[in-house]
Length: 369
Image 1 (cartoon, helix red, strand yellow):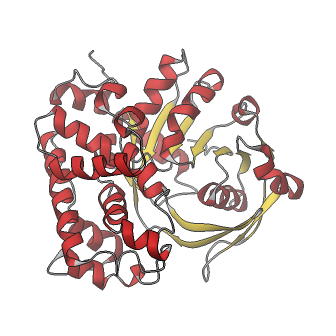
Image 2 (cartoon, one colour):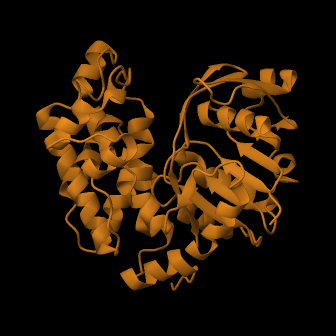
């Protein structure tokens, strides 16, 4: 098949700017969308983004075809649409994008967190979108990157393998074929339950932040998040959360990687215990804790990652007491109800599905409700 040449990147944060510049350097015609026009004004004036990188990594000036805050304009000619935004924005973007989506467009959530593609599709269809698009989600963001300025981005690392799954899974090959010339790192992630339930950020980020709340507030995050924050007792909680996640996955027919296996796969790190493995992960050294509890590790990872896993668990009779305790503490600390704001099986429209029906939905797109 002919490789798509026209990409639209939705979101001009760290990852969005990096992806836009990188794709432009790879010869693609790139449109960058951001809802706040002033945030991309310098990029618009320069007509591109300066990308820096690790040794031998992609670098240079990525010239963009268009920079806009008009969604209709952004999607008009797009063949591949990359959403590179916090997962808490997926539902709102689905509403805004729904009237402008076209048949055959590929939409990829980078990443989906947990149930991102299910939520996006449900909202877009509810808004009356009839387009036959191809929707997928990545298990994680392919880049480790940051924004060095208003029109500058830097890549620290490009992951070697990133699972990806379409909704339904029968369309995953379409997405992989469409982007293989620019992102051969993406691999078949089986289905969106696999990508969502292997979301390790759901286990590490919220609990580490909440259990170090006093230290974060007293030091403004001036300690090493994983090395100092993941003390033996804190890791016992992480292990309990991880056991619940793996059990929830098993209840829906998925053999999820546990935290030790994930650290081995992602970083080639081993240890007799999870505590040992975290301490042995050299990449964690130097990573500071959040400077405040008003951080995405809570306000994004609780409602969009941990809550949907817990909600699936409760639907299928799995005890998720450890997850529930972290979610409740987050609600108290932030004085909000993340059950109202987050992805629950009720809000996702899958609360009436048994395991067989849920599997048929994510694999074949057959939704019985």
